[in-house]
Length: 367
Image 1 (spheres, rainbow, N blue to C red):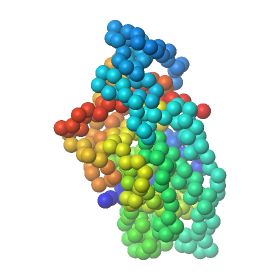
Image 2 (image 1 turned 30 degrees about the horizontal axis):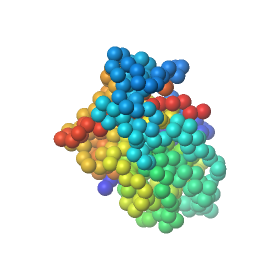
Image 3 (image 1 turned 90 degrees about the vertical axis):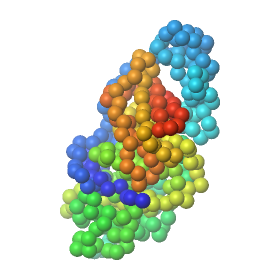
Image 4 (image 1 turned 180 degrees about the vertical axis):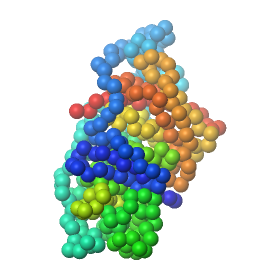
């Protein structure tokens, strides 16, 4: 397994005057989106939706479907595409989430109960301590994203792992934000063997509040070649993490965090596939993040198309099969269009030699 090894720079509104960075190796991406408030998504009035067994653009909609924008038949809430019709979404599927539930969970998952959770140690290389509130806030954020994609909210924290990741963070805060952070040389400032060990099995982030690092990892700006941070955070077998965080003045980014992600103890749902954005409703502020489809059964020769259901035509996307070694096999789907709030997009992924997998995503504005 590989830790995520790629550099990106974010400007996160809620991190005050700190810039933020995730671990990296190939370069710096200046000007990433605000994970919770920034958006390039075009907003329009909610579309009119016709219901009932009516013709839609000259075609009769199948069972459990409705006519959307007088152009396309789409699934009713709580249903998923099944041939020419729609079937009830499986239990736990993100397609079964109501819009109100998605927005309520998104809001609750971004509450920060402990804005200043870090207490510095007495010496420069003393890793200090992260308060329980900071760990709780980070776990809540992590489980919010996992719930959104249909993996439940079962990830927990381990104190022993926390110690290792706290030792990782004190190395990261005083040294370059690049791929070497995962294998720090012994001449690094504040080098310690425990932290070096955990650096090799953790996502690493710089420059923002500890809970906000989870948004960074899922957004994963600048890491298009692997989406490694996202893949580890959303990896269904992940059951226990370690969380470390250090904040220090006089450093380039002001803060550093390590999230231990090498674990396979989850007892929660392990869906046959999952995606970002997830099937069904999702916060429109994330719609311009890179799209991805994750498939444990393998992604050989996979292809994908995306149809804008408001027009009944396919939109421009570029697909890339990402390298293995970071959680599950993943197909990256790069939008060549600007997603529209309250529109519906039907994604069809065809893994090589397997039947197509079809799902609909619906960006909505969450207050």
